[in-house]
Each structure stands twice: as C-alpha cells, then as structure tokens.
Image 1 (cartoon, helix red, strand yellow):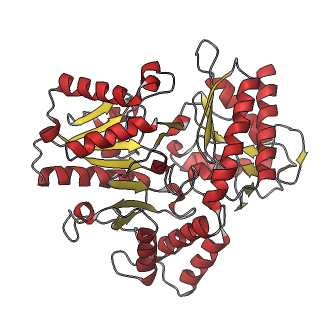
Image 2: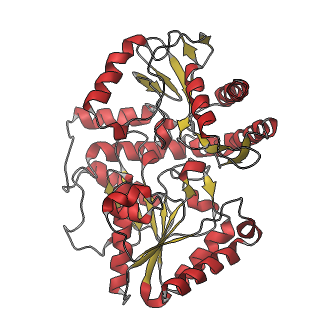
Image 3: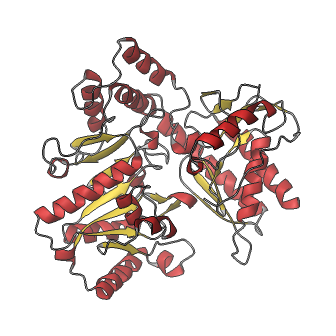
Amino acid sequence: MSGWNFNTKPVNVPKVDTKYRRITTPLPVPESLSLLEDMHRYESISMHGQMPVVWDRAEGFQVEDAWGNMWLDFTSTIFVANSGHGNPRIREALHKVIDKPLLHTYTYCSKERVDYIKYLIAQTSPQFEKAFLLSAGTEATECALKLMRMYGWKNGKVKPGIISFEGNWHGRTMGAQMMGYNQAQKEWIGYADPNMYHLPFPYPWRQDAMKDPATYFQKTMNNLIEEKGLNPETDLCGFMMETFQGWGALFYPPEFVQAVEAFARKYDLILSFDEMQAGFGRTGKLFGYMHYGVEPDLLCCGKGASSSLPLSIVLGGKKLLDLPDIGSMSSTHSANPLVCAAGKANLEALLDDGLIENSLVLGEMFIAELNKIKRRFPEHISLVSGKGLLAAVHFNTAQGEPLSNLCNVICETLMQRGLLVVHTGRESIKLAPPLVINEDALREGLQVFEETIADCIER
C-alpha cells in the first residue's frame, strides 16, 4: 500500500439518505477525531491506511458509526465477513459457548473443536483428510512451507526448493514473505533464501501467456531449471500459489494451473494454494481453486473462514498433516471453542443458506455491470477482473500508465457518499461485498461507483 493519507479534517459533504446508505454529518465525523487521534498516537501506523470511519455496528452488508451514518459495505472487512456482518448463526453459536462459559482450551479437546473439524472435512474434497487450525493467514502459509519441506526431506530431496509466483503475496512473517514476491517488504530479513524461486505470472496483458498458458508455464519453468541448475527430482519440494493475485483479483488461466499440477505430480512436489481471499464462497465456489480443475495437496485458508473471529486453516492429507511429531506444531489460540463455533456456523450459513449460490448468480451480474462501466471510461479503466462477488477495477491510461491517485480520490469520495471499497494504494480498486447482499443493494452500490468515477475524472 502506498503512503497515501486520507483527509482527517472534517469536510461538509452532501447528505445521503437511501434504503442502504445514510450520510448525515461532515466526514470524518468531528466527534470521531479524538478516537482516530488516539489510535494513531498509541498504535503502530502499520495497521492504518484505510478510510477514517469509526465503526460502531455492522450487520449484513451495512456498516454504521455512532453518529447516524451508514455505509453500504463493498469490502467485507477485506474479505472476512463473507457470510455477512454479525451473521445470526454465528452470533447464536458464540452466545452458547460464552454462556457455558468456555473461552479457551489450547490443545485440550472440546466438543466445539471436534464438531467443527469433522464438519469441515466432510464438506471438502477427499484428499483433505485432516485440518490444522491456527489464528492468522500467515501462520497457515508458514505451516504449508514447513510441511512441503518436511515431505521433501522425508522423500529424499537434496534441496528444499519452493516455487511461488511473481506478484503473489502470502503474509508478513519471514517464510511467508520469502515465498511472496514483493522485494521491498523482504529487505528487513537481510538475506534471501537460496531455495525460494519465483516464476513469472501469466498476466492478461502478456500475449504469449494468454495465447498458450500451458506452454508459457513449461517455458518459464524450463528457464528457471536451466538458470539455477535445478534437478526437479531432487531440488524441489513444492509450489505455493495464491489462488488469485490479491491486489488485482487476477486469476491464472486454468490451463496454466493444470500444467503446474502435472509438473508437480511428475516430480512428487506438493501443490499448495493460498486461499486467504478466495476461500469460503467468495468466488462463487466453496474454494477458489475449484475454478481451475485441479486438486491441491495443501489448502491454506483464513479471513472468510469464520466471517468474524481469528481463524485460519491448513487442510491436507494424513501423509502431510501428520508429518510433525506430537506437540511439535501448535498455536496458542488456535482451535479455541469460540473460533470453532464461529467457523462451523459460518460454513453452515454458506452452504445451507445459499450464500455461495448467491455469490455465483449475483457475481455474473456484478462483473457484467463493471465491464459496462469499463466501456464507459476506456481512457481510464483498462481491465475488470474477478469471479463471484470479487472484483478489481484497474485504472490505467490508454498508454498503460497507472492512475493510482485517481483511485485514491475515488475511494475517499465513495466513502463520503456512503460506499466502502477496498483501497489498495495502487492502480486498482477492489470490490467484495458480503455474500448476503441482495441485487437491489448491489445495483445501488454499482450506480454510486459509476457516478463517482465520472465525477472524479471530471474533477
């Protein structure tokens, strides 16, 4: 994210009063400034960067502050609240555990933990026989890194090579950042793992990648092998793939991923997917990898796993999940009764209340309408990407120059008009409403989005 700072001086903005949005005060709200100032005074600035809105209540697909303003939420708190803010199933499940009371068990067994893991495994593909529960997404990708290398050592690999992809991002801890591509974010580490490799991403603007995705993978893979002097049978352990490239909702061509899977199977490499943003119905399927026609060995999940509390997951077969000895892989707050109750209720809501189907059906309209907006602004919007209720709108000039500042202004103006979107700090704006949203609200948000783009371009 860039160093852009949103305005913290209250501005008189036009009043808004619709079925789904309400703006009644200057923004930021004058009475909220002391809270924002205290947050900046006492909390690391690394946690900051989004719009100056102080949340007081969130339900369904709407967010309210304490001063009468209400926003239509197209962020899902950055891909977390998939089953909706304050989902009734989740709240009821949490009340039952709190009222026992039972708040924490560490590695001791609880019924909530067993019920959730059994239910989770029953809803996933057959190769996912076991789950390892954690608290944060970066823990999950670190765990997958560990399991891929442990499997490699066990099966006679000489080097613990891991291949990930240009532009992908896997978390903020050391191993996760080494697998990620952003070089600036890795400088603090002080060295590069010599057994971490990155292949080019098949961006839609790379003509050779689009013309023949499988050949593009094979060519770039062969180039890496030759350049680094690698023997895939002895020097590589696995692949880590972000299901879609986060900042731009950029998916791989299916043929590309299928070629990766074929290569992995040929050389006994573990195929892992980072599903933090893609999982739990977001793309119109339970998991985003299902769009590719492949089956991964390890699946790393988080964010929408509970639609509320800190929960991340690694799913895999017994041969992988049981590699670490008893007691050698745990996480203090993982698998506690509250997150397990929330995780199970969240999955039940997605499956039993038709939320994944809603993501699929409304997603078709969502992407189609965004492409209409793209056609209206051909000098400013270069690409719309996404699936289900996930999209990124890419703002570039006709010459390909990024319009990051325009994105900043659009995001802030949308906030002033009662619509929250994901500010990336780049030339993209991401849109991801909770999967409980209805068509009427979705269309209202898209109309505001289009009108605001037009106004900001004119400005």
